[in-house]
Image (cartoon, rainbow, N blue to C red; front, side, top):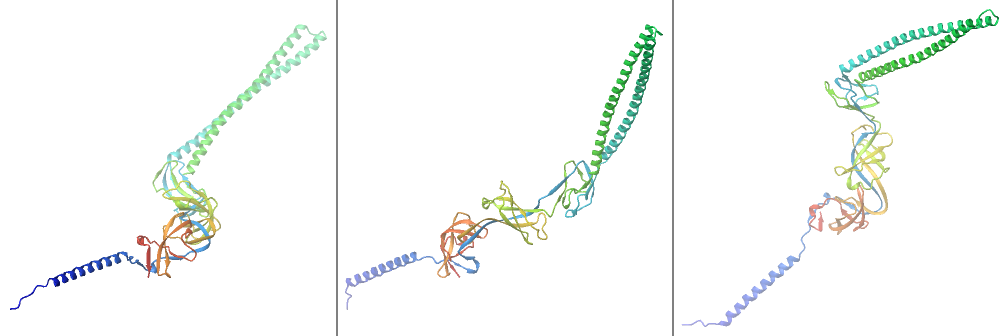
Length: 419
C-alpha cells in the first residue's frame, strides 16, 4: 500500500507566498490611501447666471454717498391755542390750500366773551367818569378865574384911586392920611390879584394831573378791552400764512388749553430734503457739497445746508436745500432718495462695489481664471468707497474680472467652478 511522504519545503513555499501577497496588499492599500489624501477636493460649482461679475477699470471715479429721506417744509407755522376753549367747528381738512385769513377752527369760551363785555362796560364807565371829572374841574376853574378877575378889577380901581389921591394931595386938596390909605389899599389888592392869578395857574396844573390820571385809567381799560376782543377773535383760529394745512390735531368737542398745538400750516413750495446717511459713510460730509434728490417723479439738484452733529440709530441726518422748480407731486413727507457728491478721483483703479465692502479694508474676492471657467479667491485692498464703485489699491489689475455678489456660502473654498 503506497504511503504519503511529507515534503516540508512545499509548505514553506506556500507560507512565503502568503506573506508576500499580504505585504503587497498592505503596501498597495497604503499607496492608494496616500494618493487619495494628496488629491485636492473638487471645487464647488456655481451657476454663472446667479453671480454678478464685473471687470476692473482705470480712470476717473466719483465718490458719493446715498441715503433715504423725506421732503420737509422749510417754513412751518405751528398754530397754538391762545386761550382756553372748546372746539365747536372744524372748517378745513388737512391737505387743503389755505390763505393767511382762512378760518380753520371755531372755539367757544363763554367766560372769555363775558370778560370782553365787562371790559367794554368798564371802559365806558371810565370815559364817563373822565367827562364828569373834567366838567367839575372846569367849573371850579371858572370860579377861580372869576375870583381872580374880580380881584384884578378891584386892584385896578384902587390903583386909579391912589393915583387920584396923590394928585389931589399934591394940589393941597386932600390930606396925607387919605393918600396913605389909598396906597395901602392898592398894595393889598395888588397882592391879592397876584395870589388869585397864581391860584388859577396852580389849579390849571391840578386839573391836567387829575385828568391825566383818569385818562391813564381809560387807556388801561381800553387796552384790556382790546386784549379781550382779540382773545375773542382768536377763538376763530386762522391759518396765519398762505400754504397748505398739514395737520389738524383736535376733534370736535375737545377742550384745549392755552399753548396746545391746534394745527400746522406749511409752504409747499419751499421744501428741502432731510436725508439719513449711514454713520460709516458720513465722515466726509461737508456743508455746501452738491447733491441730487430723486423724488421718483424727477431729479432735482441741491446742496448740503445742515449736518446733524449727533448720529441717531446708525445714521446722520443731512438737510439738502433744493434748487430750481420742484417736480410735480413734490410735497411734504414725500419719500425721496438723495445722493451727495463727496469728491472726484482721477486715474484710479476701480470696480463695482462688492457686497460688504468697507472703506480702507481688505476683503477676499473671487477672480476669474482659466478663461472664466473657474475663480480663485484673492485678497483685495479697498481704498475709498462710493455708492456703486470702490477704489482698488492692491490685489487686482486692469481687465481682471471679479465676482461682486455675496459669496459667503463659499467662504470655506478658495476656488470655485463656474457653470
